[in-house]
Amino acid sequence: MSANSAALKTFPHGVHPRECKESTEAKATRRLPFADEMRIPLSQHLGAPAKPIVREGQEVVRGEPIAEPGGFVSVPMHAPATGVVERIALAPDHRGGMSPSIFLRLYPSASQEILYGAPQDIDGLSPKELVSAVQATGVVGLGGAAFPTHVKLAVPEGKHVDTVIANGCECEPYLTTDHRVMLEQPGHIMDGLRIVMRAVGAERAIIGVEENKLDAVEKLRESVPAGLPVTVEPLRVKYPQGAEKMLAKALLGREIPSGGLPADAGVAVFNVATLAQVGDLLPKHQGLIERVVTLTGPGLARPGNYLIALGTPLRFALEQAGFDGHVSQVILGGPMMGATAASLDLPLTKGITGIVVMRPEDVLPPKKIYPCIKCGACLEACPMRLNPSRLGVLARKGMFQEMDERFHLRDCFECGCCSYVCPANIPLVQHFRIAKAQNRKRSVK
Image (tube, one colour):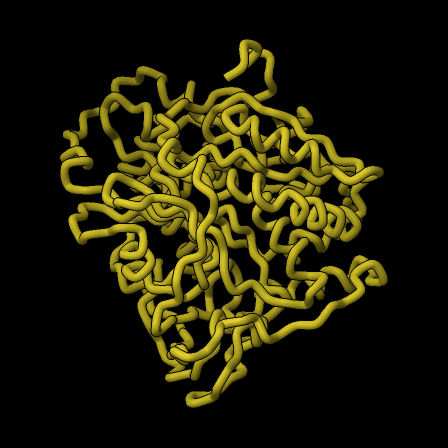
């Protein structure tokens, strides 16, 4: 860290968990081998599931569209490898339910070249045509949210976006995929920025990168093309610096209003890996079929960042990174906002940024939960300036509607800061998730 860290921009509150990035941050991205069989869920994004356009027994080539969008807030799916469609059926998903999936058996003798796509002139496309072209790539937010990227590009009527913010913070512990993308694909990031800036009509772009990635700051600054109004700003290391509301506050001093969109503050926010995929795929008229994923944790002998085909079984991917089966927890995403995998037979999807493998000796036993002592630690940590203590009390009483109406539950984006600092070990975020689920059920009755 530099001597002037305190002078760097940031947001109020937040926490400083251990970074745990040293085992992967300096390792170049490697390609993972292809599994013999893959499963492509048709719902890898927020919004309507994709609809299959292939049949069982059909041969497909790598990169070929195999499912079309199920609506505007939806994206297509593309074959991650050359092979044959074995079946289309319901299968377990990461949320614990069942969702339609395409099962693909690979041809062992195939070269697995990308055989689908053709160059397209994106400079001649209108902003509306750019939105449709980005949807055709199947790109979603690769920072974990998996929100369809083209929907962000469709600025609501009456709104004006003057600034695109590129999120290169990667504040979650253990994860280094964005760091490697910034070092290895800066040209694609700039191409993606040029595209999204034209689509939303922005006059400038700012790339926010936490100070623990100064090599990425330097690489990006070197890669800014002449005439492209892009600046790269280092930010103080703090969690959750990469949340879009926190970035808008830190970089521009703007607040995205409660219940509003980033466009209400004149900004559009995209993850750097998302921009890299847009910049790479759109000119070639190709679809998203693979992504960089951090495979890490004490349970892996060969942690690193790997380029992995979507649909690859988690177990296969972990075995390639030295997984021996001695495991207590497998976390999809980072430890602050990630979820524990219920099964290693689930496939890799577009929204999985990292997989953290913990051995039994690395996981603390469940801690005893004590009553809230009103210490105020959660209020000091909450980046949204909510009252997690009061929300937790209301949640335990089942007063979910009051949490929403009086204490702004919907503004909570479940970053986990409150649970992280609570000396009473109260699982506040879990309470809030249950409350939100109950309020959603009530709203559809």
